[in-house]
Length: 106
Image (tube, rainbow, N blue to C red; front, side, top):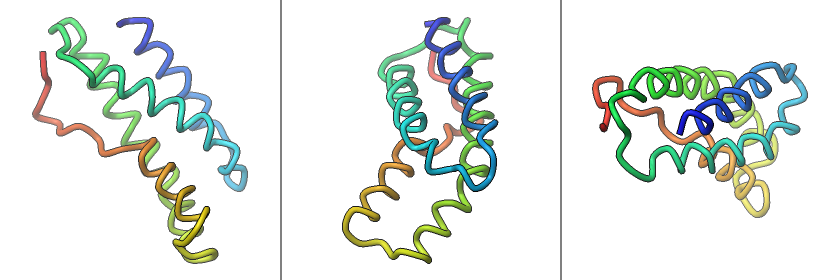
């Protein structure tokens, strides 16, 4: 499980380092990150993973903030139909909602 958290952290670093204007390059990374986060959320976690889970929550919130403008811009420029809608849904699914701050499942 520690390796999984480390992989997600590496993805987060890469995603946060992508310069503004180059966000479409992040889609594949966001999708893979979403898969890894789903693995983390697929079962209960031991208490020892509380700190990595809080770090994951913080990085998820940072990514949501970082890429929110892209979703809004795409929705405004190209609408939410056809393949563009699928792109926006994939982006939204890959980020997903941040876990509640007061809940840590152990």
